[in-house]
Image (cartoon, rainbow over all chains, first blue to last red; front, side, top):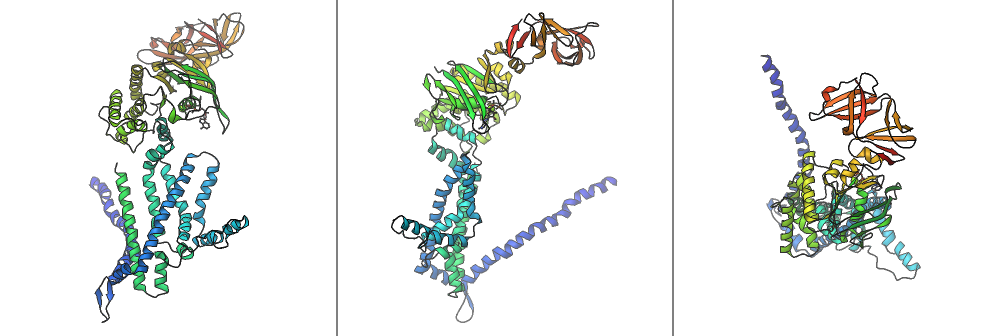
Amino acid sequence: MTAIDAGQPVLAAPERRRPIGLLLVAVPVLLVIWLIIWPIISAVIQTVWVKTPEGGNSFSVETYRFFFSDGYSLSNLSITLWTTGVCAILLLVVCLPIALYLRFSDSKVAAYVQGLAIFPMFVPSIILSFAFIRVLGPNGTVDLVFNAVGLPKIRSPYLTPWGPVIGLVWDNIPLTVLILLSGLGNVSNQAIEAARDVGAGKLALLWHIILPRISNSVLVAISFAVLGIFSAFTLPYVLGPAAPEMMGPFMQRTFRELFEPQTAITQAVITFGFCIVFGLFYVRSVARNQAP
Amino acid sequence: MSVLKIKDVSKIFPNGNVRAVDSFSLEVADGELVCLLGPSGSGKSTLLRMVGGFERPTSGEMTIDGEDITHVPPEKRPTGMVFQSHALWTHMNVFKNLAFGLKLRKVAPDEIKRRVEAVLDLVGLAGYGTRHVAQLSGGQQQRVALARSLVLEPKILLLDEPFASLDQHLRERLREEVRDIQQRLKITTLFVTHGQDEALSMADRIVVMRDGKTEQIDRPDVVYREPQTPFVAGFIGTMNLIEGNVANGIFSKAGYSTPLPVSDGPAILAVRPEALDLAVASEGSQGKVHRVTDYGTHGLVDLELNDATRVKAMVSHPDLFRAGQGVTLAPRAIAAYRDGVVIHRA
Ligand SMILES: Nc1ncnc2c1ncn2[C@@H]1O[C@H](COP(=O)(O)OP(=O)(O)OP(=O)(O)O)[C@@H](O)[C@H]1O
Ligand SMILES: [Mg+2]
């Protein structure tokens, strides 16, 4: 009798804990469904389940057909893709050397460089935009300096497609550097020295030893940057040209100024679709890299 | 046919102003295996890394076969280094780890294959080429690291405590294997260790280092039998170092005395436990048994001189001794040191 009594609570405990566990999991799952999944589904439904002139509802892909046949919409989409691609490449070109320097330099300057590289993280986009305009805009610092030393006026990138590119790259440097740096932390000094020992010069070292070891970090960094840049709003809105415009400002204008919520939602769903594709690509590459 | 010469090499690390290696000179003959032995922080790794090209000497020069390599970067040096651990490239399999250096040298693919397989065979890992390095045991990984250096046929092989992260048993086996391979290939080798067993069992010559300086360079048996300084005497094997005074040819310390034909003054008397005979004495005892440890094949007696100076003696019949007993000491071989150098040996 005592043995059975003593045994019961031990056996019963997991049974009693299970609902609590489920409850704990259920809360975030429900939140995700309510706040993310449902709006997505509802947005998609809104764009394909449209009101007919007779007052009823019917299935139609008219809004999408319009988007993909409208020259202006398409040029907005392509400027967004172009900006994203150029930013991704520039980010790698700028951040990889910074991260490599921070990882392998033991000089005291490295600490300041790190501080500088992380600094943009604490600057709101809107302040960044105004700083950009004052430095690179018409009659900005660069113009004044060039003028003072007698150099010709440069064409300001302000209000051209390069405006958002410069702003977005600057804005994304900190996160990219941090992610790359954490990846580089996994490359041991001895592995590097062993490679030099067997005759690897700087380039061979980078290409055959360092890059393969941080390929995951590069993927993560680029995915984060791409996802953020593709749907960016403030910087393209303030710094970019009026037309063509990136998807962020385009959606906003369609919604607020043209009062076409249906069209705006379609644009959002298309933007979301691209992001999903990037996301899937990222998940697949990481999974493939992790399988040895 | 490779000779390594190190001439007056010093290394001062700017941060902290540490003199890690101090006017160090050494000549390693062709096919010789020299062990750098010393306590932690004595500058062994720093010296080896300077030979490999990973640290720049503050002064001095190094040559391999007469060619000055002092300022040659590691990727251009004819040296091969085996690191303590974590030096294999985990994104490559065993074959690729070995082939990497050959590929950089633009060796033809079938030649690469032949050489890699030959070296894998040499280190006892034939057929392991397609294994991922993460799937290897610690001992196998160090063999791959060794093979990776050997496949390039370096003139000088450098090993920095390659077995430090392995267990005792494996360490002893790999020690023998490395020695075999080294002798078969007749490759000039510099080996860093802080384990005296390792140095004594593997080396043609041992360099005992302390604070970046050489204490003694000799064959292992000479280093063991005839340590030149009290530091070497205390560092290699077990040695009783008794600090006392000499007056009229008699060394004395706290009731213990023995003839020592040197001039008057302070001296350190050095006696190996295996060279110290003990006899139980009811009166006129020079020391007292503190503890007896029976190791089966022999015993070790810890005793105290009258002022609590500890002395160890190896005995063949530990059951003859009991804690608290008075004993007399009769050393069979002694050495004496004064001012850091040996002044007498008998
Ligand atoms: N990069 C460095 N910067 C500053 N000091 C260093 C550096 N590397 C080594 N040292 C110092 O140089 C001295 C010698 O170090 P080294 O690593 O050569 O010793 P070691 O004999 O290999 O010791 P261990 O047996 O612990 O490996 C130590 O005092 C160490 O603190
Ligand atoms: Mg060391």
